[in-house]
Length: 128
Image 1 (tube, rainbow, N blue to C red):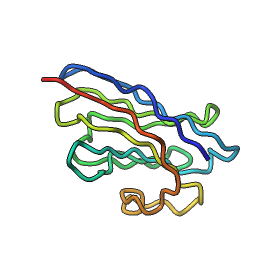
Image 2 (cartoon, helix red, strand yellow):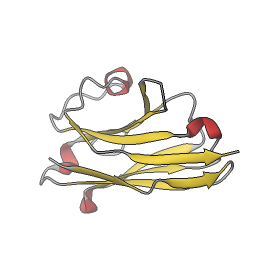
Image 3 (cartoon, helix red, strand yellow):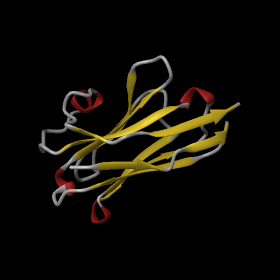
Image 4 (cartoon, rainbow, N blue to C red):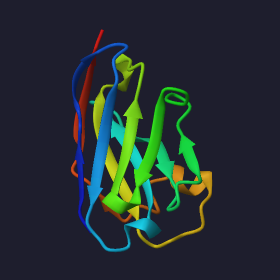
């Protein structure tokens, strides 16, 4: 399993960005996927997660209403649409995959524990 995150960049506060995470693997449609981020000097934090079907999603309180996670199983890709970006959103964003087909719960997928595979990260910088 390989995950390739892309779409980061330097934007101004209030702008939008869409991150993509392309996955290798024939059973992508069975995987739960997540996005995490790590700001300089801080621990990596949960951002959003989506179940294998897309029917279930979870968001960190700090991004709820501004970010949307989605997936396109035919393209083996998960997206993170980020609107109304704030300087506090500046971080390296990582996508992660749980290929085990575990039962979806918000609590489970807010934790790093179920994610067995991680992408390399893409930098998002929001200027004020």
